[in-house]
Amino acid sequence: MKNVKKTILDILKKSVDNKIAVSYADSNNTNFPRISYYLVYHGKLALSNKKHKDTFLYQIDYFSLIPLDIETDKNLNAIYSGLEDKFCISEWNENVEVDVEEDSSIYHYYLEVRIWAVFLASICSVKT
View (tube, rainbow, N blue to C red):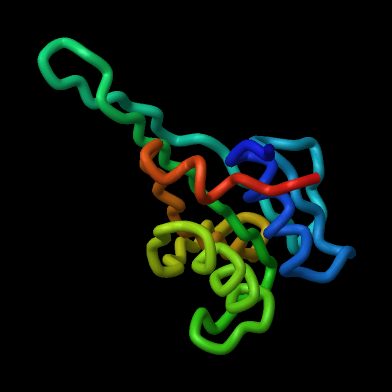
């Protein structure tokens, strides 16, 4: 059985060209484009003082030196489609970091993957 982190990693690697680095959390890789993902939130819902379900929220980050069209970009669409098949996900969002001194920008695209533990068994169950 795979865990959620490994399932997301496999989807990301399968969705994009193998020249694009994919890593969990921060990496020392400064190449562009690159993809990083990490656990943003892990919460528990308790009912009558007993654990009822877990909620996990992962963020997928895609960094580029050129602006991308979130509606038509091949890589963003492939990532979205791959994740959408297994998880509840948000839409792509964009944030631009401008370095005035260097006269350059880094384009940061991100989406959220939300998982409720009730669904984990069906999402991540893969025979190996």
